[in-house]
Length: 245
Image 1: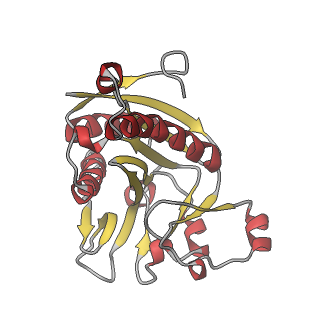
Image 2: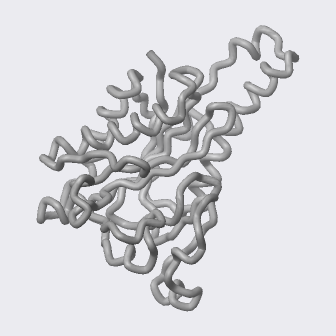
């Protein structure tokens, strides 16, 4: 069973969280580079590549994946300033999405060689974490063939709506980026984009589905438990004094 070092970053600007992910990924990649280049001694070969899970909340921001289309951002720079929303072009997969208050963003930095070398399986497992989590609240999540993320009523075109968006990057089987679960999210910010590049389906939140505000601390607790279950790992809390970030 693997250890996954967990930290809740709280509210953090998107660029700062992205930089942190890159730093954690690079730590693992440096070890792999030495191993693959056959210059490693026993100490390098035995050096662990740590796995991480970061939770956070971002100020209002739109992020565009590397395969995304700028036309799916429906407002200009001036309107973005008025809305107090920042914008980033990222190196994750997927199209455009929104992050903001009331949303739990999860960033797993995992060495999949310690689990399985299958990105499709990894994405399905991330979806399963969300499906099980919202299931605790009586919300039935599902998958939409050909689209990542977690959906409600995906088989009914007039009712299909996304509750969790996903987009990842992988390098030498180390992952970054992840999922964004709408808990108490203000959904009006999705009106200014074509979410995930899908124009004929809606976005929802746990709050909207349940008709009441949801305890985000409780949702995070369940998310961690389900993540540990799905990835057969132990979630170990850490801080800056224990692991250098």
